[in-house]
Image 1 (cartoon, rainbow, N blue to C red):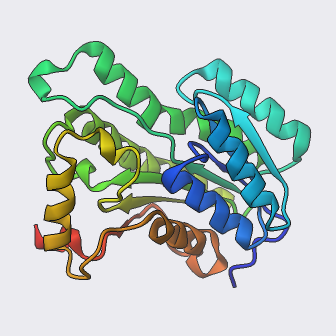
Image 2: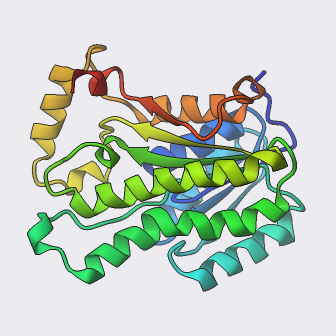
Length: 250
């Protein structure tokens, strides 16, 4: 049911953290993978090597998904290697962690461009390469619907991302392309290390999560695999939460 043989998946921000875990999981089940990265070339090369050990092909492409010219060039490279694309995972994210009163227009535009608008550009280039049965996934966070200290602009951009997914679902459903969001709980990745109150966030999450542990990148990857499978054909336009029950306690 989870076989992805012959399928091609593009994961943005795929060299580290959640993106890397998703890339490895899809490769484990037979998908050829394109790993997008923007800065960490060494991590991208290590991810490519790990994926190729699973017996599939992997291409690493450096591109800033917030820049249209980079997205165009990335898809040019993809088309040189593959004649179709089956899965797009919009995972690359960035943003400034500051109180709302300290944010600038540059901070706002930066987060919105990378976390939300990039998905629109990616979809516009990916969909012409997709066949019925294609999948588009976006990785969001609980900050899209909850107020988190210093998360103002990132949370707003994730909320925009989730709204965009719903609109894409309406447009792309008739083409046989499923579109969904994965909303992850607190995941201890390099991104979390940038939070000034990281330890407080982790301790609070552990205390409020009924299952008693943090969400891991592999937990998110397992959900991505499910949503890419034939078992998820009728899950469409949804935000699916993977957080061990953290969000249900308000």
